[in-house]
Amino acid sequence: MLASLIPILVALLLGAMAPGPSFVLVTRTAVTQSRRNGLAAAVGMGVGGTFFGTLALLGLTALLTQVAWLNMALRLAGGLYLLYLALRMWRGAGTPLAMSADTPAQGRAPSLGRAFVVALATQLSNPKTAIAYASIFAALLPAQSELGGPPSHLLLVLPPVIFLIEAGWYGVVAAAFSAAAPRRAYLKAKGGIDRVTGTVMGALGLRLVADAVRDAALAR
Image 1 (cartoon, rainbow, N blue to C red):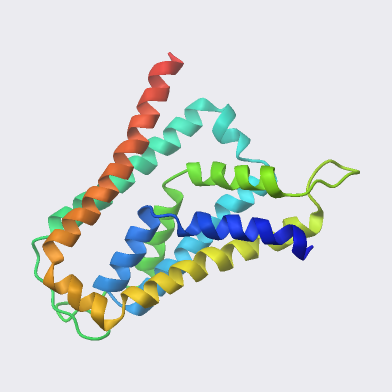
Image 2: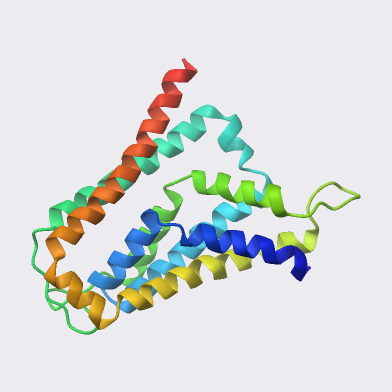
């Protein structure tokens, strides 16, 4: 079993480490709020990744490729959500912030539950993640000769493994960016950093919206 898992684990880890809205959000949460909030966001990313990975294992990602209107609706909703986050980052760019070692000095840090929910929503905002998982599994999961599908033990093992990889990677990100040096660097250049991260998030959101609109136009 281990031999068949290793290439899948490597592919999943590389996918988790790829820069995107999830990385931007966890980084910003860890720097601007607290390490605990950053770790809560990492858990949210893990839950979202496990959800998409489970859909891929169950074959439900076919809905995203065969049911055109569902695919377009999910991408449109996800893109609009990322644009909303980008707008909030831009609006907060001019707000001064002072931080203690653990939490923002001006006002209390958002709750752990809110950090978790925002991260989960961000992870779920891009349905292409489910298709990426499906591609990895289609390429690397070994077939079970009698039934033609993957071995049942891998179907049981992979969801918790996906959670550990996703939450573990973003936990490392949260721990790294909640350290004193990244916080000080952020405070010195808060406005510019917030505008850059907001622009990145907005560009990703616009791409999802544009893809959905383009596909809707082609479907007519």
